[in-house]
Amino acid sequence: MNCSRFHKLVADDLATTLKPALRMQMEQHMRDCPTCREHYTSMQTLWESMGDIPDAPPDPDMDSRFFSSLERWKREEKTSVSTTRPARLSSWFNSMGWLIAAGSSAAVLLILGIGILIGWNLAFKPRPGSDPAFSTVDELHRKVSALEREMALSLMHQESASERLRGVLLSGQLTPTEAPVMQALLQTLDTDPNVNVRLAALEVLQPHLDLPEIQHSLPESLLRQNSPILQAELIRLILQLEDPKATKALRELLERNHLEDYIRSTAESGISQLEMI
Image (cartoon, rainbow, N blue to C red; front, side, top):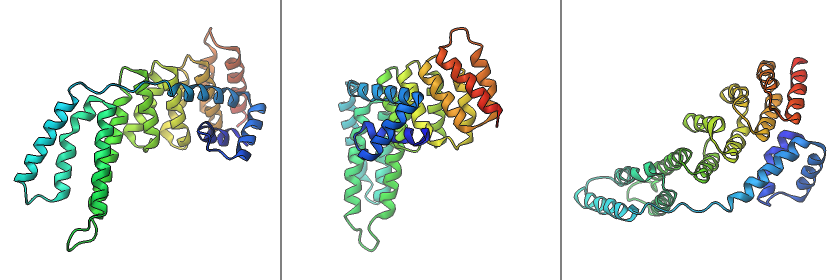
């Protein structure tokens, strides 16, 4: 088992969904690779700490604003008999945009639940003279995806580290390669004050190392890190890309006075490795 394969299996192992044979291969790899062993330990700590993250309390005014929007939607429903069902759904979702702006996890989950119920209703209730509302369901799915994306981006800009971590993890369940999401993840990796949040952002970006934007950002990000764990992870990924241009970043890192001995030796070894390419 190589390092790349090991990292792809870490999440499954922590979720206890990994097959015993693969688990044995991971254990063998950790015995032989100190970098992956350290990475697994850090991700295990992060995984366990997620269980201690408290739920964010909803906005005190959420109920009144929600029911006010609901009543407004009902009035529009009665006065717009000719309006098609997809248009009314769009009006409903757009009227609830303040929830996303508020960054309330509970409120957004409520809207997602409503969206799922409406989707089931549309999917299983054929409309006369037409196919079952496939186009409407597709539109609803796009609305829900947009809500999830906005929720992830909003959470990544919250003051609470636990909320930012939730935003990063949610982005990993969406499409991290979308430009706004990827830029938010790269910014989080570079600037977030919490090491666990930065480490989670790197974990989400890692499966997409084939993208030039991420490849270009990793050496620059290395020079912005003070955490030995993140420095070690970024050096490992930079070496995996086998880009000789990254030697400049490694040399700049070695100029730091306060650098862990392990990081220093890893960077020096990486320079030698890249110079041979």
